[in-house]
Image (cartoon, rainbow, N blue to C red; front, side, top):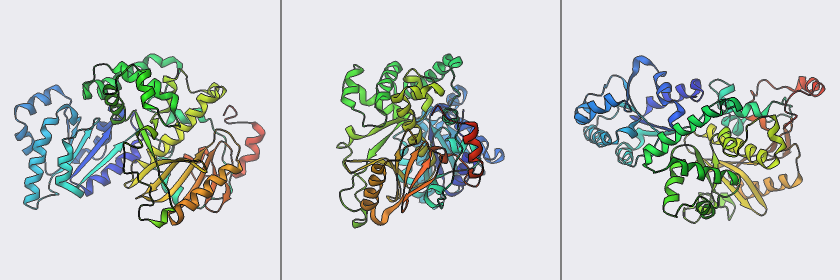
Length: 445
């Protein structure tokens, strides 16, 4: 199931106006072809490079194919991972156009579900004329609110002491997914999983056994919310330290999962230009990164569960699912905005499950609780974070299972988890008494 198209279509249409080449990267099931075809059918020259017939025609004369691209329309070259050899001809074409000062004459959207190193040269040639966007399955906010993104609200909205209705969190999780997973369609989910692994991992990375990728994912599912011990996962899956990184990177490149890197803050962030947010030594933090699945149903499936009202009875599983859900929601809603990065912070006096930064500044910190309690230690962690960030502090949010928006301190708030998808203009305070009376909503967590 493709991500909410109302938001994506308008977003991609606007991007294509300002750049010569738009590179769209997403998992094979995300539906890039369906999305780009809806931009404006009259302006699109759609070419699916996965078609055996088209591949055969282009391989006979790739140079002629590139020269015949339509300058009057946007040329969509989808599934370019199936024919990566044409990238060198694209590079040559744009090099010639650039030397003649004719950039802007040819518009191309490239769709792929793989990392293709050859595209780096094209990015060097076009510089600011090429834009890269990662596409993820829909967030709950985008599924429920047409053409909406909650990130600006988190940065700029004035917080009011309001109540939000209890909602079936398990149902909302299913909206933020790529399939409606129930016990009845386990076989379908198996088939979908096989499709993703074969299209995104087996075929694209020439790995010998997608089943090994499943073993890695099952092992990683036990470490949601904490750094993944790759050496232990490597040993648990009986893979050597050369093979394992290839499979793990395939999971990241296939948009099945993503990592949060640790945010290093040794001094007040406003005392230096970057605030020590960026750790330059990637090898140093490799064992400290946290791995998350982009889809909660995927995680539940790997752990042998179905997301339903009974999941709250398994405390550890529910804790991991909620943590993964909130982090993946923040990842999805931030993916379509330039300059946004996600981190986490782990200090004895300051634990942040997620930190969102805009252009390395304007930091928002999040802590996630799997119950309705608000503890003083939560507030203290936010106060330390606020002091560390200095002028770069934007907000601090405790995401919890209560109903109230509460101001805990200046710039620090407790937010009901369903604030992440509720329409701010439809606050529900007038109906709280009725909801409490009827007991509707997520009593099962």
